Image (tube, rainbow, N blue to C red; front, side, top):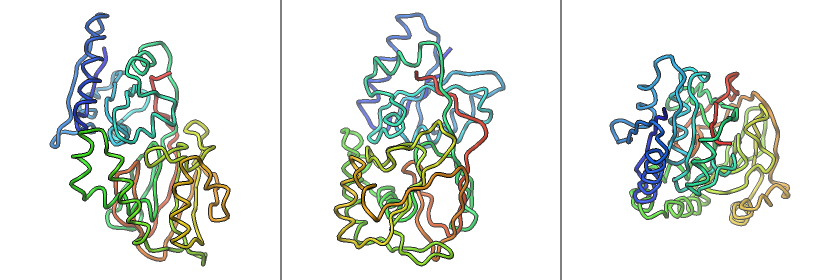
Length: 298
């Protein structure tokens, strides 16, 4: 039995994906039950309602945001096995895990025997707009990129462009605008001006930017990518170079790997996890859960 949770938010492509999966299940005699997320009952709510102590296999048809909602809904990682069929505008989780957007191949990778274990990082906001703990799968952004995500979250264009498969354009637009708006910040006991920090569990974020080429969601470590001491006009060239991971060759980028790290900022700084804004914070810490997420895609 597979529980299929569909986020229909991006319109026709996700509906096409679901119709294909439904047709294959019916053709092969595979038992399934389907759920469609809504504004009042999202992926997180649905997955929580399915957990009653037994092992369940769940397929998410959606984007990076849907997977973030799913991983935050899991109560016992040994009892929930997730399959993923990408249909969002970013697809950084699928890209990092080698999960293709080809519906046929993605579904077959779920149905064949086996699974992978995936690291689940957590951010703990100790002091900020909304103190909380939040799991993530791709990345957490601090500073410039989180400011861009904040503007995207307030934009009416995101939903409209998602419906025609062009949601990435709103990220590009606000990414460019935020270059001239972000305020550099400093870390406690450090004097350098920081543009942003990307805390990476996967190599990619932002819809295909290779921010940390060596990051892996299966090594028990997070890659902390810090961009600092950079003028705004140089940021204009640096960010596009991250498409191919070339930014790491510049003197403005520093990468460290840790399983735990804490930061205190000299001012409230915007945060995002997996593209979802978390407001501003002054003090945060990062860790990786002992439990691993079970991913059915092979």
